[in-house]
Amino acid sequence: MQTIIWDWNGTLLNDVEFCVSAINSLLKKRNLALLTTETYKEVFTFPVQNYYKAIGFNFEKEEFAIPAKEFIHIYNKGVDICTLHKLAGKTLLQFKEKNVRQFVLSAMEQNMLERTLKQNSVFGFFEEVFGLNNHHAESKIERGKQLLLTHSIKKEETWMIGDTIHDYEVAKALEINCILVAHGHQSEKRLKNTGAVVVPDLSMIKEVIGVS
Image (cartoon, rainbow, N blue to C red):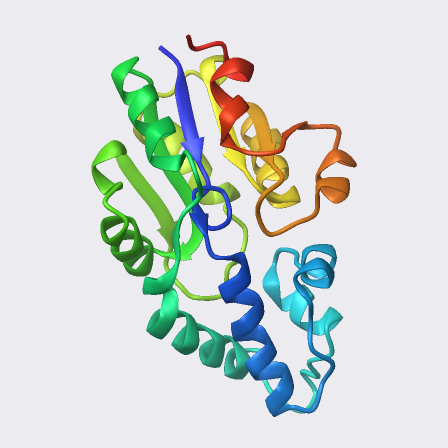
């Protein structure tokens, strides 16, 4: 049986513009250069602490936890305005109808992850959702290993679908297949440099996986 492990932010949830707006409010407060959506997609990375450093935050002046908490506060307050990417709901439903097992593996904190999935009426599509136990958006590899073990998933029949280089790194570490979608948090050029299969949006996912 085919299994899909979905990333959430940027892959199914269209929150890129909101994230750019949120980080710019932190940058403006510190008199740092603001980001455009294009520059954001070229610098965003995991762990996010490295991304913060790259855009000018000085962790000798303040601990990473300070801007991280500020960002999460803004994100929590406004994430309700974010909607699913076009075709996300339809794609999830199509895979459910074909009895494809579906999970979420996210760098989002667990409670927030569950909340945003429910807000967008897609929580019920997934057997289980795996987030992190903090707001620092660190590696998803260990959580991914727990997911595979807990649900006795066959690696050769499993696909990780995400929108970042880290999703590719997770797939490689878990020894599963990978598709990267270029409508999320990193540019198509950066994604293609991984050598992974890259598609422009969710419309081609079924074709690549081979589910008709």
